[in-house]
Length: 199
Ligand SMILES: C[S@@+](CC[C@H](N)C(=O)[O-])C[C@H]1O[C@@H](n2cnc3c(N)ncnc32)[C@H](O)[C@@H]1O
Image (cartoon, rainbow, N blue to C red; front, side, top):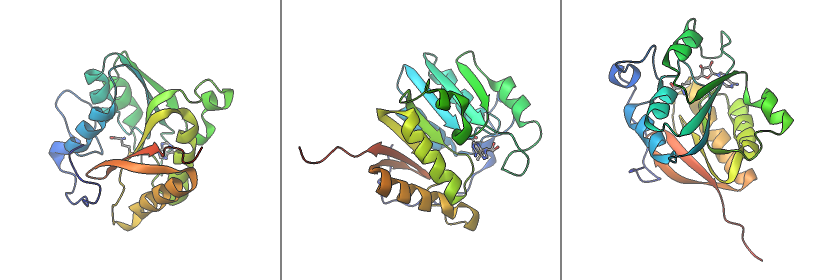
């Protein structure tokens, strides 16, 4: 990620960011952010995306990382940031290395069974942007990501009223769970566990 940790995101989303030829529906990330996430994804492994919308961004990553398995999580429930047809778009965009789980990070059945504990190399959080939901997503991501893995959160530093909760949630999570922001690109932050101190 090229940007320094103290740079503030400014540019609004353009149609060039939202719509990509060969994909159904729209993405909610700037093109630079999609590439910023891609740069954080290893060549092999597992990635969880919390909040997928039409699956445009995740399909872009899946096409560029054919040896990585991508799991997307979204409740597709009206009133929580989704719209009619998004699930159908997701299925149109899906590559063979993608899976969809209808739900939220807090009630992810696989998480409860323990099958996905400390499993993912990268968890990308872009679901419900309210402070408490985003915080719960970060906490759940902590259990789902490998100790050496990364949690990436979208919309950090945004000053719009309905997005302020993301920054509050991330800052609180870093404090309580001992994570730190290690990289930043536009409104994306990459969180990693701090190295343990002392003996
Ligand atoms: C901003 S969009 C995601 C954009 C997508 N990551 C992209 O890059 O295009 C937010 C999505 O989060 C979903 N969502 C809302 N609440 C959620 C929750 N608690 N857990 C997971 N996803 C949620 C909405 O249905 C919506 O599709």
